[in-house]
Image 1 (tube, rainbow, N blue to C red):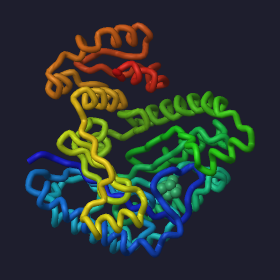
Image 2: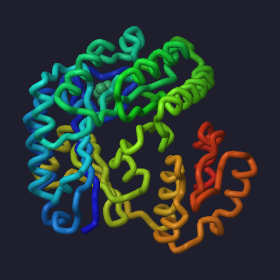
Image 3: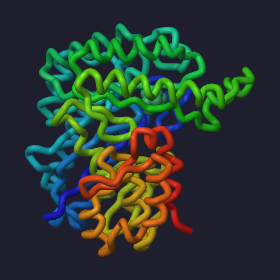
Length: 382
Ligand code: SF4
């Protein structure tokens, strides 16, 4: 049986953060019950379609804030998933969490009993002033309570999400955040560079304040390099542009994305990639619920990927990984020699010091990490 990774989207949050453009809503508590009813139905519809041909080896429950809803909803979600698919006993099952909501020790035990064996906690910054400025509902102390309670419940496979590049954030403050997280016993740290999205309150505020985005971007590179230095110096291995793990704690689920393996997404705005086609679910919550109720489907768009697109996505996603493009895997999937196919680009980028070819892999060089987007654009055709 082929393996598949599964994603379930929980689009509810206590409060919308000012930089967030994910599909997540505050003040929609009345939709929690019908949303989960629809989510369970959506999962079940795949029993006949895929249940007999795919085994799930990673699950990611993301959002939104999955721990904002009652733990019972998550327990049922995983039960329904197991009734529909064969979920590998060793599967990595991650839940994203926000330290704002009150989660008691017994809730963590319930998450564990439901099979969640990895937590991904959004701290973003250890500065309370910055957390407030960007609309996070928690403080560093809330995070600490949350983290320690999770540890007491037996969680050791924990990722902490951090963001750098806010105008309000000094380099010294970023250093303190890194040092703080390194003082904990976490196994995985994700350091995301702020992507200032048009339409978010933060974008409008920066615009109104006349903040020069270019200035932020210069400091952003300094912060990225600082993160790399400190995390690598503390025994973490960088295995993707934003991802650092202690040996053996790389995220199975995320690696599936970067390897352009098949995945299935459930819930509002979720995507799937199966049999060379990408499916996009409708984002609006009410429309999603209605779609499942009326048609047992909330798919808004289907995109059949041609060979060229598949290849382009494979290369671009692979370049996100520090291991880069696996030449043997590329040949297996596309029946071509990567170094012949992209001889011109490889030569040029190697000459510019941005790309390395070694051990049957083509990957970003250390300098290339700072110019990853430019390198990737070289592999976009048409
Ligand atoms: S907690 Fe996450 S999903 Fe929710 S509003 Fe903040 S950034 Fe967005």
